[in-house]
Amino acid sequence: MPESGKSQALGQAGGFIRDLANYVGRRTPGLLLLVAAGAVLEGASLFLLVPLLATLFAGDNPLSGLPAAVWTLLPQVRDSARLPIILLLFGGVMGLRALVLWQRDLRLGALQIGYLESKRSMLAQALADSRWTELNALGHGRITHLMSGDIQRCSAGVHFLLQGGVAVVLVVVQAAVAVMLAPQLALVALGLLAVGALVMGRWLGATRYIGARVTAANMAIMVELGRFLGGLKAAMSQNMDAAFVAGFRRDLDLAARQQIAFVNRQAALRVMWSLLGAAVACGVLMLGYFVLGSPPAVLLALLVVLARVAAPAAQIQSGMQQIAYALPAWQALQQILTELPLRDRTGEPATSQLPRNRPVRFEGVTCLHTASGGRGGVRELSIALQPGELIAVGGSSGAGKTTFADLLAGLLEPQQGQITVGDQRLDAGTVPDWRSRLAYVTQDPLLFNDTVRNNLLWGGVDADETAIARALELTGADQVVGRMPEGLDSIVGENGALVSGGERQRLALSRALLRRPEVMILDEATSALDAESEAAVLAALAALEPRPLMVVISHRPQVLAACDRRLMFEGGRLIDDTRR
Image 1: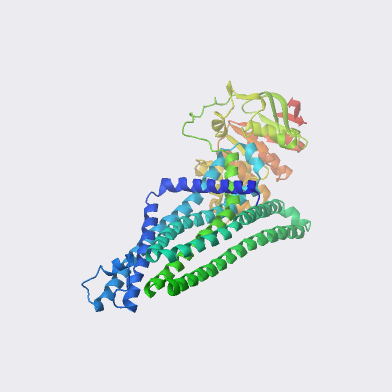
Image 2: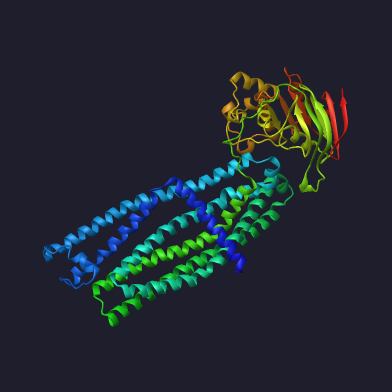
């Protein structure tokens, strides 16, 4: 890997570790104590193997140095009682160790889950706090993939990072036990294992590259899937589903090959560690037995310790591979959180209130879409909208109709000019209050896989049965609900799949009316209705008392003719403003 790539990888790894360390430090101050206690008890259980083996194989004290101290703790105990007492001590240490490890692993699991959910929550908050232009530019496929695949890979990386930290403490304690048992042999063995770890560590760069490829491939899968589902009806009606499946399979195959390559590296790493551990153990035993003349009990205990050291050492190496694999996913998450910075609400001033039922004025407003080279949007728009007006907005595709509606809803901000309500400017401080009294219904409204009632009351709308019945009657949705087996408690399916497009629009219009809005924006909101039904709905809306300011975007001449005022856009400019 080039030096720049190594520096970048190290920087990302450091950021990942710091991010997790900050989360851990704030939530589980006792975790480090549990990790240390577990490692110390592990070392104590290994150290007790020496007198246990010496009792089994020798019967007297064949030991010297520090291991002999354990033996001499029982100077007055008869030989027949020494073994049960040592076994009792060993069992007590192992039992206490099991309890400590239980609490340790419980806290580690809670940390992993909590970290994952905190990232999901941060991403959701960042999306909610972002401007519409920023949010719309991200793409649904990217967001979906971050919320699912990338965060899951981050979770796996967190798991191995936490377990790797535990493994490091274990290795240190177990290495210390090995040195106390047989200093020369232990240093030789640990040196050989360290050299092996350095050699195998060269795979980390390639693993990070594989992780980046998997992130890109999975992102392509989600984007392609979103495109297909968005145009599912058109694709199937034109036999285009086969072409989609072929492209989808190509993306799946690429992602699968990269994931298999990672699994192959992990499996090869485990095999290499097993072979290295066996070779080092055999070599050290031969050195101790033939050259140094170490006691058999010490050699057997050392063999057990080295076998235990090799396991967490392999776990550290494997964990580093997993972390390298997860780094691109973590980096993608951090990038989007940087693109959509969280708004600090702690010192935010109270939201300003706008005056009620006042004219809305566009004063020299220009808002162009930079992503399209400045071709879309509105230019130098000056217009006043009066409370209670029923305004039709027309024009060719890309003329500026939707941009005008999004500006009115506060989704977009003018690049030049200003929008005022009464004598107060519509800006970041006043737009929350403005949106609380606005209803926006699109051509393809969103319905949740829930009951009709919960869909109507979505967003905390407070309405009784009488208000619900009146709203359904105005839009003709009362007949739709009346045909459903459970009435208001009937499930509408995912995105309203169990009702037709026109019925979905009627329900969405009813939901908008239940907000009791001061302003209603209907962007092709009746396009799925036939001409007679559309006329009836518009007449009912026009007869509302009091009537909100209603802006109706449509391509249909009969809709334009049914309104009090008509605005026509072309090339981002208002070319006609006619009142009946």
